[in-house]
Image 1 (cartoon, rainbow, N blue to C red):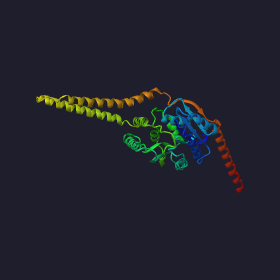
Image 2 (spheres, one colour):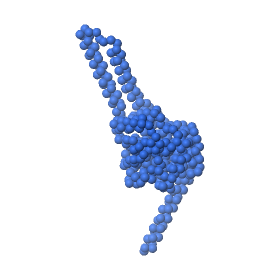
Image 3 (cartoon, helix red, strand yellow):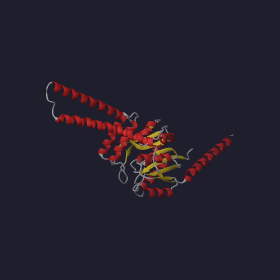
Image 4 (cartoon, rainbow, N blue to C red):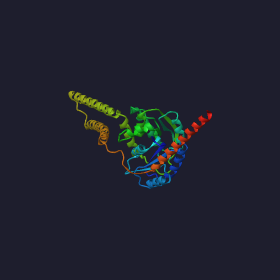
Length: 339
């Protein structure tokens, strides 16, 4: 059994500008919940001083764990690496940019005490984000829920507190193209929303530009829905009906002795069919590419080194065991006096 009551997993990519402040605020939030915690920082192939700062934090605090990946794997796999090594009975997943306030942890822990397996943050306000990003995020979640066979809460990210059984199941899920918030929804159990207002980034720049957001959206759609394949089938059917209508029109005009209209109609038809075929092939290609990646069975991530104090967990466990022994002795002494 784990000696830690709480683990905090923090994926980091070029976060030198915010790491010290995040570590300070996160440690205070953890201390308000339990003395037996660890903070797991995952350096996702940063090119700045992020790793050296994590090493410094680990040297100063034995409850800090540093994981350095060999290269940049992306946010979802960096988070997966941290979750695979987290040892707590409860695990908080949070980004280092301080948009998700660490101070919410005690309130989320109280919510979990009510018997929930997952407490996930639901954004009711987004400070520092453009109208375009808010609109596209809203559209994405609503479209995903329309297409997905698994209900995925809207206006959520990966900011969530999870129980040990949920984390263990999540770690056993082997897919390469990961969409963690959807995977947690798929696991099920008792899950509760925790509404909060998201802050603006404390420092630095966003690590999720439009290109990465689109890539994540594609991963989400292909991981939790086969409806795009059905859309491709319907497009093929519509194209066939359209082609049949053109054929009937051409034959009818020929039978009546009328000249078939010029090249414009041919170009339109060819362009339509070509575009539809390319779209359908693209949809099939996305799914086929993911099948190829799964079949290869490569590791999800490659870890370069791990910095942690192995005695930290043992010390926490010893203190916990000692406290239980003292409590048991005190109870026994009270019972003896009552007799």
